[in-house]
Length: 229
Image 1: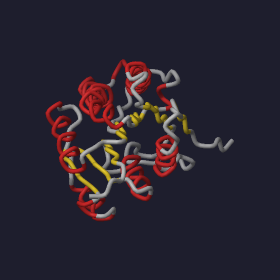
Image 2 (image 1 turned 30 degrees about the horizontal axis):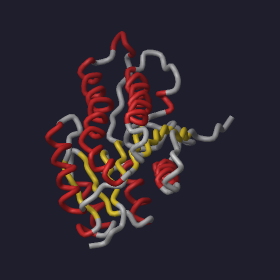
Image 3 (image 1 turned 30 degrees about the vertical axis):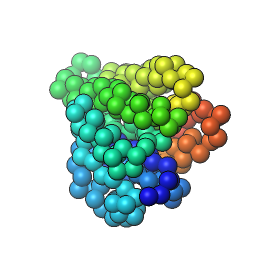
């Protein structure tokens, strides 16, 4: 069994998650890829070396039992977790606080905040053991005020979770990095602007953070498209 490091990625079936899986594979990582559906994950597994290098797990991050099982399968298969990228998330819809569908809010809050908390809780014992690296997908929307945006509020919360996790883990050797993309051309958006970032741009930021020596803790990486005017 190879001793290459292991990275777990939630929301790995497309967009930033899939791009990060490809980038991490090139760096020699073994992968645990989780998403609500395994259909796209199966193709990604085949592309990146098959089941010897890539474990795929069906996981709804809103369900604690799914996340517990995800970590158990990862440790049974690879014996360790070195990096965990809590990337699963979803967007909202137009309407602001006045008119948006509250059911969409509920699902978004449970995915973007509660789901991230569950990922951290279930992965922390393994990360403490490896003195590993926790990464969270925040957003540029978590740094600014966007009128009527519950999505922005959830990403402000992710920033707070990242800061809080870093303080809880102080002295443990576990590093915590917030990855904060601006507009990215992913299925997340129906019509991203022409100058949007690509998922691979964010994947490079993840690899930069995890590739630093153990004494370097990259706290936050804010990545925005270069202005065109």
